[in-house]
Figure 1 (cartoon, rainbow, N blue to C red):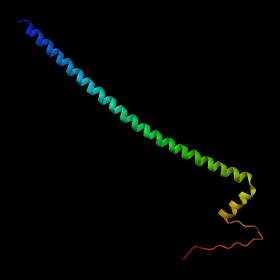
Figure 2 (figure 1 turned 135 degrees about the vertical axis):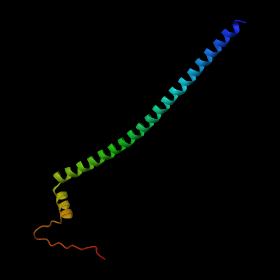
Figure 3 (figure 1 turned 135 degrees about the horizontal axis):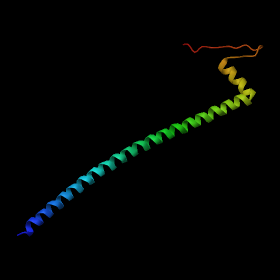
Figure 4 (figure 1 turned 90 degrees about the vertical axis):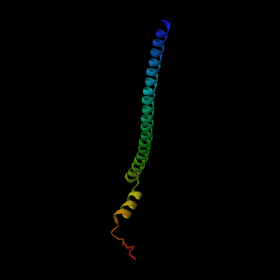
Length: 101
């Protein structure tokens, strides 16, 4: 009969260890899940930022090309000044029409 109390203690210890193991597995699984969610969030954010960076670089290249053309092409510069600022040569007459209905 002395074997039953020893076996009972072993079962209780084994159940406690299994319970602790289960608690640890659940705890670490929740940590891993939370970390994975954070990773997904940061990855999506990184993709959005990279897209914005790509767009900004394209815009920069376009503006740089425009500036280069302004500095190097006198005909383009003249056309831009005429269109945007309304400049004319001294011997020219400009007509401006309004779009009012």
